[in-house]
Amino acid sequence: CYEKELKRNPSLKGKVVIRFTIGETGRVTEFEVDEDTLGNSSVISCIRTTVRMWMFPIKDNECPVAYPFVFMPSGS
Image (cartoon, rainbow, N blue to C red; front, side):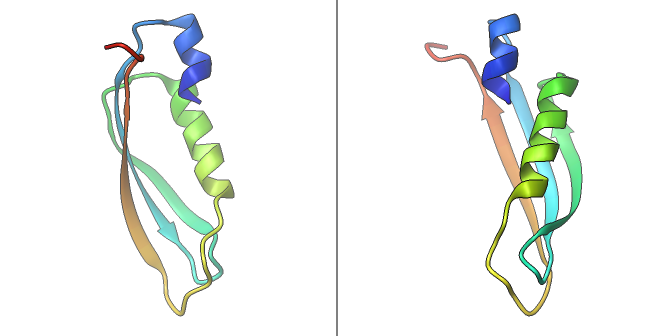
């Protein structure tokens, strides 16, 4: 997600914190952006699509998760 946009904007950097819920089936059932200093809607949209495809082990209950992504060009 980030690498594609980095080609368009070589100085693109920031932090995105997402919150999602892993449902009992192991699929992501809810998704929201909790923090975004990256400010790039294409990267956020791609992250949303990618996270919704993730699969986790099946559990007896839902599991809320908050996960930070910190993006910066290599060599920074």
